[in-house]
Image 1 (tube, helix red, strand yellow):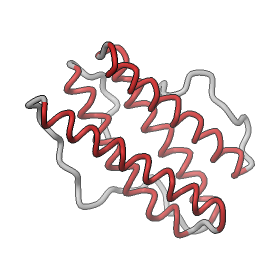
Image 2 (image 1 turned 30 degrees about the horizontal axis):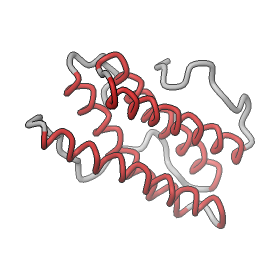
Image 3 (image 1 turned 90 degrees about the vertical axis):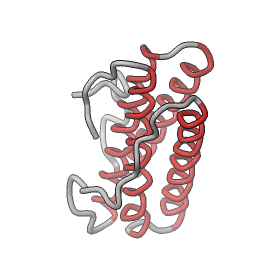
Image 4 (image 1 turned 135 degrees about the vertical axis):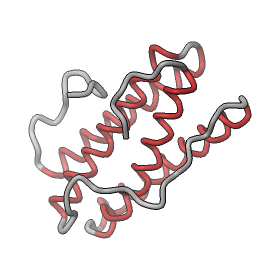
Length: 148
């Protein structure tokens, strides 16, 4: 996933779509390392990312835009071998997805901007919940979705 600034609304939404693809893929290795309520939360998170992916595919294709293709696989930033690494990756996935949705904000208006803000907030809240599960502090970050 690229961290560059989008040059158009379509570019910004395409970036958000690629972030959704990667998030969906990452929740596979995350979910198998979790149990109980955490596993359900991972499945719910994956479903939310799938919903946003599907909406973006429809939005981009009906507007005549380019729909970036999904890849067959993604390289994880580290091995997911246990609960702790699964939770760490879940936080990173949500933070990275929030970064791409934050980039949609200045490139959008109206309902599209509202959807981008809703995604940013949802992913920031989810990252906070994953940090709480992991026992990580601080639980929140000052500016969710801001790179670096």
